[in-house]
Length: 333
Image 1 (cartoon, rainbow, N blue to C red):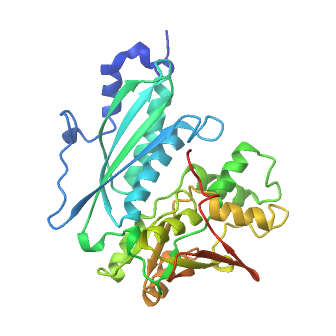
Image 2 (cartoon, rainbow, N blue to C red):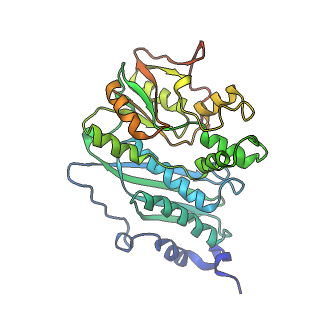
């Protein structure tokens, strides 16, 4: 007899598959053509969508099914945090090969809902269709007061640029998973921390709570750093029609990055600026407010530069100043 976990999707059919997946959703929010979510009076809805495709965003070599689900949820929750929003719910559209093991998919949903539950968020529905490649289309819905929305287009000259944590950790974790011999000079604890940064990133919804408690009406511009720190700063500056000055010496790095036996200074620079998938926030705000905020965000948060007039984005590295542009940032095409 075929064991329950080794059953293929094509063996159980769509209705049985949906019944299994609906077990991960609140019973009172599913069963119709759409879920009904009611934002609080005085709030706007925020909607964001991401896609994850097998062998583009994840692979069996680096990501267990539970981690695929966690990362998918975290990426969308991070987008809500980047908008200053509180999550309400999440939907998942699936494209699945018929010979995919049901157990693999259930493990994915276990990881996805484990991430959601940490942030008091629920899965409220989705869709399933046949596909030659595993594909997840995830949509997250949140709410924010109109005056508290964080946008890329509101940065002003004189603003401090704050990052909420280290950059380069996810890229280093991916390297350890793909090339286990790399980083052999790292401690066991540092290796585990870097791998966790890649497989189980934490969306910074806590930052929004801290920010609103301190300064509920403060103007804040920003976005998350899912495509890299350099990309985030460049996109904010482009949207706000401003420039920026960054200082390499102030950018928080993971433990071990200062060890030349682990990676060269140039590699540390590249991974911290362009590695991506760290899911920290890059925020631009009044310098006094920034100085008040940073200590409450943990030891890895820092002011890394300032917004300036013009359009040039520069980085001071030792005694050199280099210009940043989009040529090295992540692009799908």
